[in-house]
Amino acid sequence: MPSPEVVQVAKRLPKNLHMGTSSLSFPGWAGIVYAEQYRVAVLARHGLRAYAQHPLLNALNVDSTFYRPPDVVLLTQQAEQVPEDFRFVVKAYTGLTTAPDTPRARQRGIEPVFLDCAFAQRAVIQPLMTALGAKLGAVLLQFSPLGLRFTRRPRTFVAQLGEFLSALPRGPVYAVELRDPEILGPGYEAALAASGAVHCSTVHSRMPAVDTQVHEGSAGPLIIRWMLQAGDDYASAGARFAPFNRILAPDKLSRSRIAGLVRQGLSAGRDVYVLAANNAEGSAPLTLQELAMHVAP
Image 1 (cartoon, helix red, strand yellow):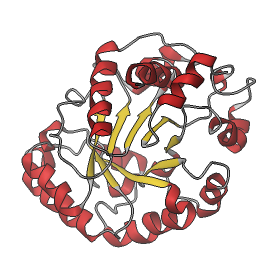
Image 2 (image 1 turned 120 degrees about the vertical axis):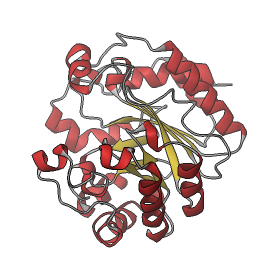
Image 3 (image 1 turned 180 degrees about the horizontal axis):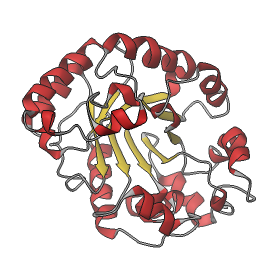
């Protein structure tokens, strides 16, 4: 369980800093987050209450909603298990962010609702608002690699994205995460600003350095996801790092860059979210502990 040093560091962190992991059902977190080593199914059903008692973990990145639209009953139950200041960053259904004519869409039989505002409002946004209310920190729109049709003409995609974001219901924070660096640039940032959406800066092998993806100046929250090291992929990283109970590949450069972004965001009075995956360094909660040591005043 968290050491006295971690508890003291957590007390020094500002309330507008939200730190969390990408999913939580990992038996290897025994002694780090959980008191004992429970089965995955047990943690999936009952782990959130214990997770939310960890002094550093006041947010959670919900991944299951990427594969199917949100379950209002389940998310309502989860919201009841966490404190009022806890926040969920929830992935939107992948059909909204996967180009329908890509190999990924065809292989996985993904519903062709790409940038479909009506579907987003009915099947994703409204259920999330109903279930989570004020505990909904952001709706995360993770765009899988879009293919040459879009990356050769990024301005066309940016225009479509801007129209989609502007048509979504007001209220939630919408965060856009890309896998195609060709989309980045002034036009993309202008489209986000016009709709009130924000960029999700991600540490990922397909993207440039986390602190170079967009310029500062957004009025919305700063959202950072720490996913993968350069040149890595999810399958190989997961195989190397399991059971996710140690930091096996420290990424000190990314930690330094993220710490700098966090300090900038906090000094500007923004809400800041840092969401880490096991595949970043080997153990997401331990990654966040190390980061907290760097940013605590």
